[in-house]
Image (cartoon, rainbow, N blue to C red):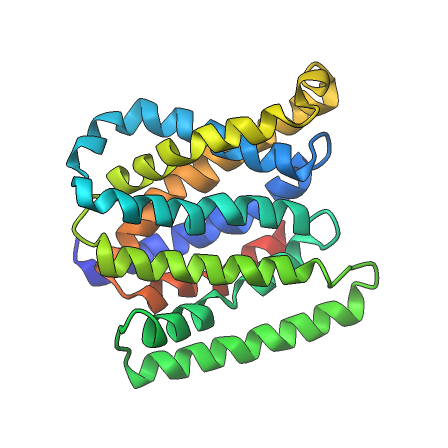
Length: 259
């Protein structure tokens, strides 16, 4: 299949997967606190990826591991906790809308920090998408009277993290297989995630039915919404541009609103 066709198929598949992630986070918070949810999301994903992709780690050159570590921090570790905390006070649909500011952050960081070049049409596309995002946010704030928009700042920080991650992969890891990058990411993250989980009251809550039920949602979130999604997302970055790959966030709210 040609790259032009494949990138659109991956884009829509990611929109479906990540658009469903916001409701999974919301369901997971019924029985878990944000730090437990973020940690379990990483742990479930790490176990899955190390089972299917451990051998692929050998394909990562030693000098590339620093970039793998950085992409793990910005691409998953920090956003996993930021989104979980934000959704304790902000609806999943509003979070998905705010997440669509990622392409703008990607374009700005790519041009100013990473020295990447973009076409005029990409700037126009981001501008149109940004306009739609602003309208959706305004409309959401008008109808969602219970939202705490101070927590929305956490989502904005997460979009900057995502933008940094996309540009890092495009500039420094384009020659590394997506499965290798993703597995390496979670090998780096799993120990810190376990430590954070240990320092919560998870050991006393894990036997509760409500906690176990929440863990099922987080398991799906970790394996499919994080592990599988990251592998195909990194593939998308490699066969397209950072701005095109991050434009998936314009489609995510559609799925999130449906849920």
